[in-house]
Image (cartoon, rainbow, N blue to C red):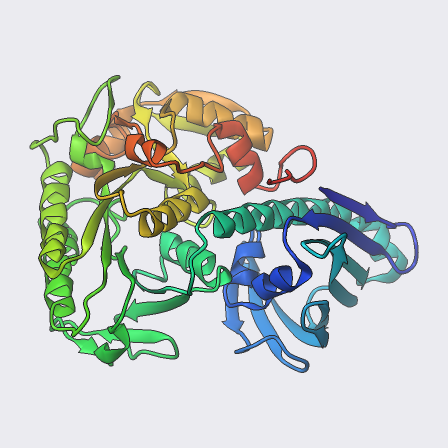
Length: 477
């Protein structure tokens, strides 16, 4: 359990948060020292970009990142000092928004050493002296409390996940679309668990990357030998613009044609991956009205999105000829302030003018980014999971209820509904088959195979995503 304390009235404020962890100090240290730890601990309500990261956690190395707040941005340079493997390390701000910032991460063994305490202790000073403390002191303490509630919740949940999906060796997993919302979350979850992530990119590859050419060939493809899994999340954004004829061709080629080429290229390897997981979407069911569908329900053949998803899955299914277990990841609407539907929906609510399009009764199959990535991890490690899998939360919700939940979490009004005519005029068929369509897809296969969701309630989900969660971080057994 976390116990944050702040002595904000002193000339040199100190913030302290103590959290009991169900792992040894060495294991807690390893999690923090691996690639992906900073991404996992970064709050989703902050627009944060990593500019430079060290190859390993050691004295003298630096982490450089940028925080954007509207049109403004802050560059933060953190120097690592007092690095003691298995015991702790210190981040010192060399450049950033504080007059002084020194953050000690300490790992203290408890009892027989199978558990430990994570002690986060921050000594900081605000710019502007007494005036800065008077104006910003209370806000900073609130921000730190929200930040560490989030950090420790994620840490406890991730440690439980890594324990649940423990393996006798680290896996090698390639991710196409690794820079997207789901891909970055998945990559960080896997890396903090000790697995090797190979990112497939469409540019000259860097460290830990493999290039993919427009001609359908690998650059340094030998790095894809002996993969345990290949996760394909790439594709042009479905809701990024009106579906003109050229846009439809791009959506199809970036999915169907590209996945077919990827599978063919994987077939040229001496040892193709054992598991092939490929993105799809619940749009494959079409408009289901108020009926809840499962993976065994009939598929739609109407419109543009459903036939596209069917052809997309058919292309991915060709990987079974390579001996791979194929999983079709039928994603719902992924909720995150960092992108997608929520990033478009939240700003009007934050401004106090939030409403939803249509009559608000259309059902939305939603899921958080953490649960989306967690479901993919579950798919990698669960041999009996094969074929279509609905990657959605257990309960779809009417869009009007989603708006009400967002307003409640943000403490802002929900003004009801907006006429759909304007959206149809602006976005045409894309609006009809995404925002205005009703699809309730149940995650039957995930539940049958034992996946444990992190978020199932909308209000609590939005509170966590925007740093408004109430109460201490949860204990995870």
